[in-house]
Image (cartoon, rainbow, N blue to C red; front, side):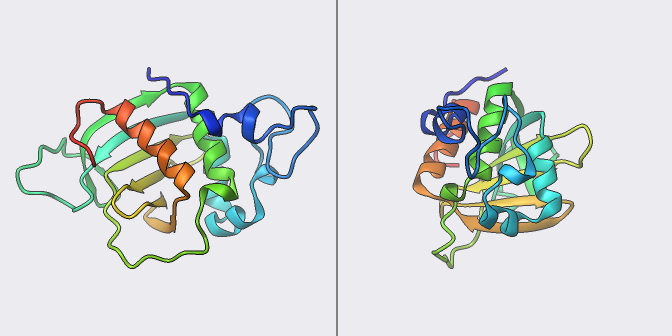
Length: 184
């Protein structure tokens, strides 16, 4: 198992008010995130099915993927995340990190809805959010253009990452695959 502290994105610092009351985007009790806890703009962007998969995720597995499709000479396991070959992984992440990733994805501050980029989306890192009741949700991160995508059953929505979210995902990626060449 792999444990990573994300600092500014921990549940106690960002979502749960110190006085124990409900907040705009925070879990009301314990470590659970409910659909109603997700910021309105994020709910609209992700849609109901992706949100259900996000909030019910109990496990997260990390992958290093080839965002160019199939780079000549790159070692691939034969597995794919969407259309992207898996280069390394999966790496199982611990329960605290599962919660931190769900929390990060639920916050409007993790997205940069105001900007639009014209670059080609070439993710090098993917997370598989696994739930006992939902089909997996994949979060793909492109460190070249600072975008992330949510992929479920072949349908993908893509948005820009905030600087803070990019830093958090970079830390997760580098720690998950410490010997891999960077950037990926």
